[in-house]
Image (cartoon, protein in one colour):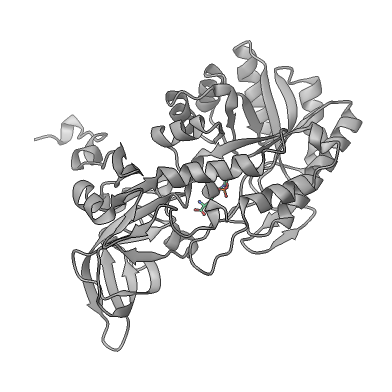
Length: 433
Ligand code: LLP
């Protein structure tokens, strides 16, 4: 079994209370307050090893972590130590890996509307690759690089004609996507690069077919389509492009109903799609969710409850859609467990958030021991796209994040304070009394 196939961090244990990384979760909740993001270092390193082992026979495959899943200094340091490069999509993500001491050659800058300022920043820090998304950007990047007297290595982001949903996928000739060049636009952009954009050095192609993918055939099809296109480009344009970035997308297990493939299955699917020619290319993969999701849990404290007469029972937590917007945005499902030792009967409840809208429901229906105010619950698989998509909705401070390992816990992100919330704000003089 690989780590992304586990619902819980691999160190999860229950003696009396629930513990992760050798740390009692009730004690963590008391010490640091809730909501609290907890990252289990052993689980994070274990998935990194899964990736390294699964791909060890493919020297031509290089791994980058998609920062958008969770980006902060400590996480970047661990992934850097594990040998991953980084896929970034903003100056903020670039700055984070830079400050974490990452070799900028291992960084890719991707995105459909990078600003001029971000492009300048990325060029100044010498990021290794730009994934050029569209005609406007190719021209802009070339101009800025020329002004700085630099030549920049690029990939072309393309839409390969595969669209993935979680459990199935469709292949179409053309896809309505805001990202990348349509296959029919490739010859035009390559001619521009060859003839006019002399400060762009084209190395290969980049694509990403979706996220939370369980259907491995779609990755194999993607590799084949990209290789075919690369060969066509090389032949038509007399080029020797030899890099492909196939994006991220491997799924994780949010509930017992989810059965994601293992990292080894992913490696076999990608490896199986490679022929002798493909093995000579450099292939990048850039997983985000499958790297960090399982390592993360969120702790909440139970407050109020409401029994709707002849209806369901709501139990409210001290967080919700601002620290985890995925249920309200995507109807994402999560699994919760009580941390403190409770022998009460099971009860069917709805876990409601504390934010002011009816849609702020974390879990529509679950069965847990009868909960009371003060109980602490743990929600699994919140490492990816929770903190990174969190907000200050209702003017609530963002939670802290701790890293746990062998009984030790370290704060890696401080909880926001009320002063943090107003720290950027100014009352114009004319409004002051
Ligand atoms: N590479 C590219 C170019 C991407 O656009 C993405 C994700 C990844 C890699 C990483 O994909 P992953 O391995 O994490 O599936 N906020 C959504 C997910 C958005 C994913 C966007 N792109 C969610 O919470 O489900």
